[in-house]
Image (cartoon, rainbow, N blue to C red):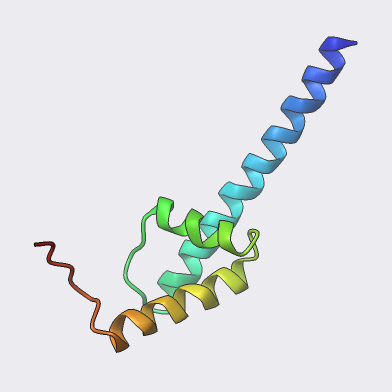
Length: 80
């Protein structure tokens, strides 16, 4: 009984992990196709998490984020 539960739990974990990896690859690919700068996998995951792994919505959020950074002059941070 316990082994069955653990197996189901492991399968669910690996399905979620596979979904994360595929979405991350698709998100980074979409950014590179649009001519955007390279983003790290960690950054891609943050935007994907914010949009429940919907790649199109995460990409739109990233574009809005970058537009806001440029508009507000937040391209370089210089801590005091």
